[in-house]
Image 1 (cartoon, one colour):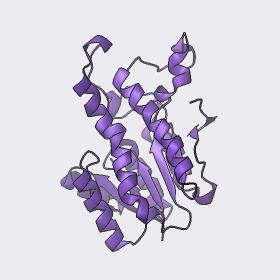
Image 2 (image 1 turned 30 degrees about the vertical axis):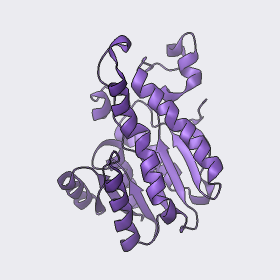
Image 3 (image 1 turned 60 degrees about the horizontal axis):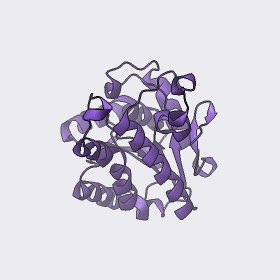
Image 4 (image 1 turned 180 degrees about the horizontal axis):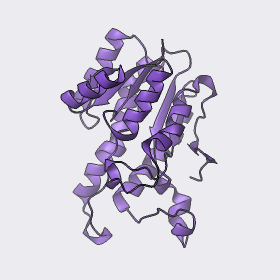
Length: 234
């Protein structure tokens, strides 16, 4: 039995990822910070609802404790939960604005990996998928004309830098835990609540790389930044 935990899985890309992995035979825990929404999503998917707020240490640990009691291990952890930044010009963004974004997009994956690491270590071929963004690429952001490399590029100080931080976490975690396949993936500019459904890709298209990586087991990339077309520059 393949046990998979997905954060932020009650809607959007997380929901579609859960649906596809359930179809592949995974036992999926649908992580959601709202118990009712999580239950409704899990019931619709044939999955298990898991109350999990990635910004709350106690919530994350309680979720890990429940999965340990019910399943004993975790084969796949998908750090999908993420938020966008306030719609403000760069000069108006404050420290608290960035803290709020980082609390979900950066510290959230740290909390979940820390809490679920003992369960991942009990799996035969554990995989961690960090859902990042091409907007977190230093190469793309540092280019004199970033839009020549990425048509959907925006100078989103909080969001872009949070995904760059997540990418660095991915590299360092992969080095620290070589027995676990840990990678960052870019779903692309997908139409979700995160961007007001302005994205050009469907959730089905966005979930493809997440599902492929999550299902790859021992063949999953590690210490890599990947998308459907191959690898991305850091």
